[in-house]
Length: 349
Ligand code: HEM
Ligand SMILES: *[C@@H]1O[C@H](CO)[C@@H](O)[C@H](O)[C@H]1NC(C)=O
Image 1 (cartoon, rainbow, N blue to C red):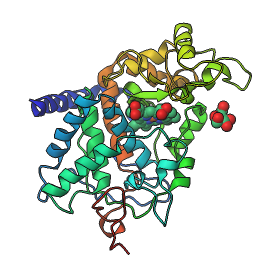
Image 2 (cartoon, rainbow, N blue to C red; image 1 turned 30 degrees about the vertical axis):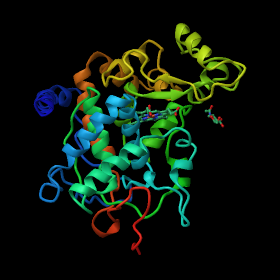
Image 3 (cartoon, rainbow, N blue to C red; image 1 turned 90 degrees about the vertical axis):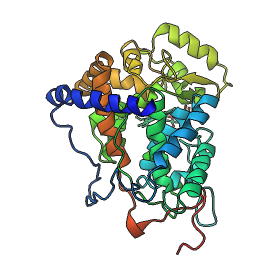
Image 4 (cartoon, rainbow, N blue to C red; image 1 turned 90 degrees about the horizontal axis):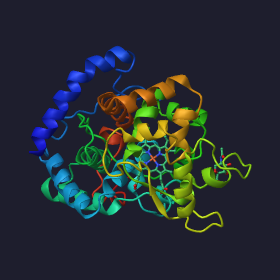
């Protein structure tokens, strides 16, 4: 049943290619290669066809159990792909715990007390090791978990290039440098994405990941009390939402880890409601709302287009998340296949 749904989704998106291509003719590149990196198109959707054909099935079956237990875990797993790929490429560096050689990326400011889903990744990886020992990398495990979580939340399916290897180090400082903060201006958000070889379409489409999941008060409270360092709220924030958020995130302080849905309309469904909310001034993070209010006509135009057309959003999302998933992967002997995603293999040189 699940697979027939996927096939339908694939046919549906393929048939929409035309409309999307007409409206946005320049968005057909597949890989993202930041300046200075030579393209190495070595990832392939068939990478495990001979060595672990059941890999995706294993991932999806564990995801189903995990999501039944806690819906939000789908969002947390999708976010892991973003936080992995923006830091030295999609190499599972985000999964490593502290070691004698390096400090974990889990301690970087954007990740601390925030990033989650590691136990589910461990469970998936253990099942993959059991079925196909030393075959599926942790980086591919993250990518498969992100796609499965998106599909199981009602979002689009995409053909996923595989064959990434795992890093032998974590890059805490780079995580602080490369992961955008929620109070970033639109100009800076564009710069963060450009640094990864991603464009404005990618920024707007991938921000649509905030159609699922939650944020802590500390991630949006500047908007309530001190938006421009002037002790005033963000005037673009819709009034009713302002009052709700102020009760979750009180003016006197405290409650920093209280949670609100990023998409208050359909928090656990992957749909285009996120963009409809932005147009109404009901985006949760500053980085969400500025896509609409930040004064860039191309970006605001994309927000409106996605608010009006979920198929167009899905079409662009598939293209952009494929690009993000292709950011400077380690291939062949550049990396390894970790046995335990939290630690570098012992015999590694
Ligand atoms: C455009 C720049 C982005 C910024 C500034 C940003 C920032 C944030 C912040 C601050 C949170 C809440 C964290 C917390 O309070 O604990 C969050 C959650 C989330 N982000 Fe982003 N994000 C961005 C782009 C993305 C992208 C590209 C993706 C995925 C491809 C993504 C996926 C998610 C998901 C799914 C959640 C919810 C996680 C959960 O509930 O555990 N975000 N993001
Ligand atoms: C964003 O928040 C950080 C940490 O609170 C602060 O230092 C910085 O000035 C803020 N940036 C903007 C643009 O408000």
